[in-house]
Length: 255
Image (cartoon, rainbow, N blue to C red):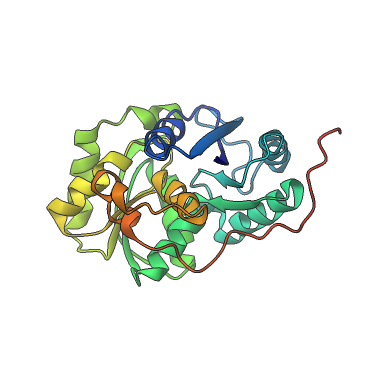
């Protein structure tokens, strides 16, 4: 049995829902979760991560002797990809396990596909959406279109229905991006990727399902059979960049 752990915001309901639905097709995989305190519309750490909270979540997951860990959250787009890389390094140092984030996996996927003209579908209000797109532009991407629902409460993101999300994707598709990204991990875009790809003729990726796909591939599973349900990404080979390697130190769990 292979096992992986995911850290998710405390008010998030979509990460577990989508992750469990994907993993249900893989009898030899189990997913495990830890929550980081984040709820409402106020981020106590707007320009960084809650490093203590992340450390504690990683320590708890490490008790279960998991193979890999993941931060299933998109904040890295707003605070900078380098902080996501630092997060991966810190968690690996604390837990002795490789670490992924939603933003870094999507970055790898888009670069591997040479998809640098991107469009984002999000639940966010304009101010935060601009911060996110600014982060992606700083990483070398041309953000050709965005659609935001204008929401600010983290739980409220999960209430957007499939019809509205699909219409937002059609809206940004008019710019003919190389790829469309559902960019929020408390938004149920994952089941829409495959049907929208068939309709629009554009790759559609989701920030919740992308790191799950990457972990499954890293654990040695062929995910191609999942592509009709979860989108073309699941038929792809994993990018060459590995998880942040373990430094070989185990987590101190008695402190």
